[in-house]
Length: 178
Image 1: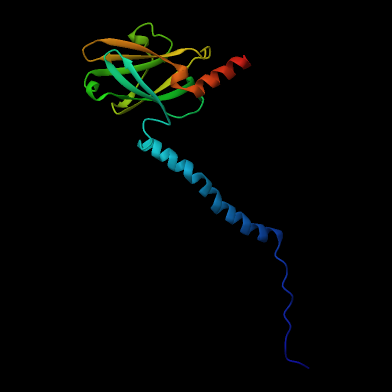
Image 2: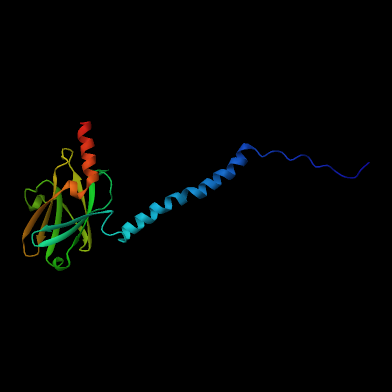
């Protein structure tokens, strides 16, 4: 009689044990896919990408020149106030001490009390969230109202097509579904 013992044959791993390895690998890989978007958002928030994702150009409002940009290149977002779009603005170097407030709204304001959303932040980068009314047409204008410390008020029209082409496309799609 031999003194060697035989070991039982190794059983195949169950289906759960085999896929547990693949699931753990997937959980390590998935966050890596989202890292570029995270760093893009981080650079946008820190100002490394300029005023916003899409610079919309300069606009002369009375004696002052404002640099405007679309914060994110996407259609308006839903908000408790309705559909809104965020824009950013920077004041010219010489007019930072002359401008008291800058407002933006869709359509020409009736008065300074109805001037729209105020740009808040520093003169180097200020934000405004503009409500987009449901009956806005794609050829409408955003009106920029700038108020000076001397009491002067200046206005300028800014076409939505120049400000945000993504909003114009969204407005066209909204008009088609009405």
